[in-house]
Length: 413
Image (cartoon, rainbow, N blue to C red; front, side, top):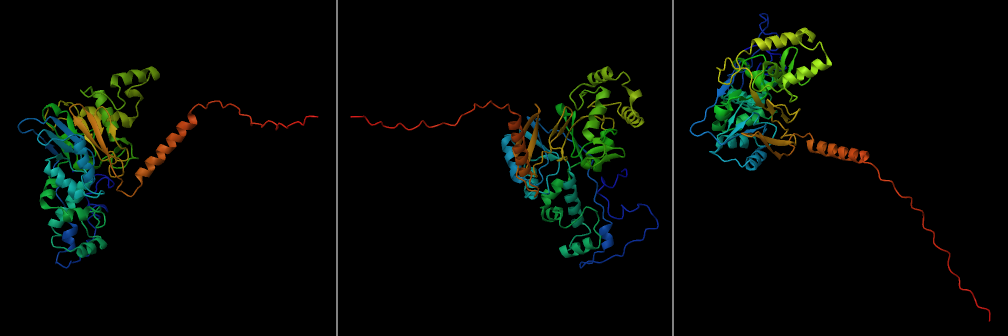
């Protein structure tokens, strides 16, 4: 697996981040827990990588609908309501989850149990991955350790991964999840490819790296990527461009079946428009980095037919989640379904065939008052609309003056 920037690669431990391969690095002093486990054994633990691609097939009759659902994050009640809203019928429909079933919300165990009971397919999200690694650690070198033992390892910096912490919620989920549900979650792959009429679609949690064929994608990138920056894939939103924009830009010039770009225009139309405004438009007018990126993409994408082997397929339509900051992102060739459920947004389903969207509102479980933010935003928009509304001319209303009192005149006799 390629070495990734540290802000993307969370499957390393603290020593890996401090000069991997440095022969002069001294091992840290080992401690021994109450059950006799060496901290060195704990810190050196490495969980298996998730399977990269699961090529799904339909057994028997193909389902009537594929129902893709965005990041649930432990919101079991909303998950159930969304299944009711889409009128899910087990045996007739296939649910496919885009990852992050767990963490942050109130009932991660309920979500995983419900997903397993309806035989949902799913890809592994970055929060699912942390729970799975915790579970495999607790079933491995940490088996039999008490919570105080683990706390001692945490205080000594001897836990195996830099994103492991006892207070983060992932440990609680992993340590209490029934084995049948844990095994179900652990078998989720990083990518799912779909059969038959849906073979142009691929499912990921974070996204895809545009310069690589599907079989050459890195599971860590697929689970965590948000942007493509100067140094490659990044989980940060301020590094370069959104991965789905780079993906669309790469597909457009190649003339694939999904040739529309992120703006909805065809690549030919965009080029003609650009030439009208800039006669020098074209590769001659691009920077060296852009030319190199495009030539690299063209070299690596000679075969893009959905019927080609996975080692040759590069570009497909992608359904993904993960990017709550950008919220729902529905474009021609990419469908981003993280609509901020756990932050008081919505839980969204994307349905094939027909590309229909359905959603249910969610409570805010994160502590950030997303609902209040929406109310303030709505009040601001209403005030702005009122300020822009043409004002009617008011009639001047003069104060009403009472007539003088009528005095009775005495008659002269």
